[in-house]
Amino acid sequence: MTADGTCAVNGCDRPSITRGWCNAHYIRWRTHGDPLGSRPRATVAERFWAKVDKTEDCWLWTAGRDKDGYGKFGYRGTMVRAHRMAWFLTYGEWPAQTLDHLCHADSGCRLVALCPHRRCVNPDHLEDVTQRVNVLRGSSPVAAHAARTHCPHGHPYSGDNLGTRPGGSRYCKACQRIRFGRDVKVEAAVKVG
Image 1 (tube, rainbow, N blue to C red):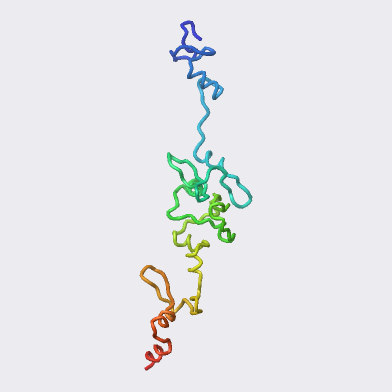
Image 2: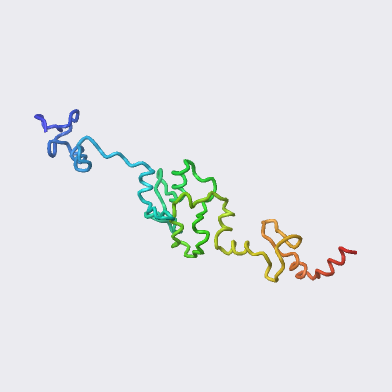
C-alpha cells in the first residue's frame, strides 16, 4: 500500500484492500501468483488435444458427447463434433462433406450412441466422403438393402434385369413382369419373332 492508501501497483489509483493491492490485483495474485500477470490462454489445439486419450489405435474423446454419442467441443461460441474439429486442426480446413469413421467399418458395432468408434478423433481413421457413401458403408437397413445382389426371388440385380426408379431406388424387372402378368418366356419369344 502506498502512503495515500492506493494500490501498490504502479499506475493503479484504486484503493488498497488487501496486501497493499486493490481488489483486481489481489485476485490476479490469488489466481495466477502475480498481481500483474496471468497465465497465457491455451490455444484451441491445446484445449482440444488435452481432451483426447491417444491409445494405440483409436484416439478417444474423453469430454462431453451429444445424444448420438459423438464427442462435442466448444469452438467460437458453438458446439462442433469432435471428429470434425480434429480434421480441421490436422488439415487446416473443414471437411467438405461427411466424415466416415474407417475404424468402425469392420467392427460390426450396432450399439449406436454407445459405439466407441463415434468417439474416435484420430485423423487417420477419418475419410471425407459423401453422405450416400457414408450411409452405404454402415449397417443401416438402407445399407443392407444396397448390398443385396439378388431380389428376394433370386433374380440378379444386374444387367438387363436391373431397373431404377426416378428416386434412384432399384427393382427387379423379372419380378415386375411376373407381377403384371407378362411372362418372361412370352416376352422373350416376342423379341425373337
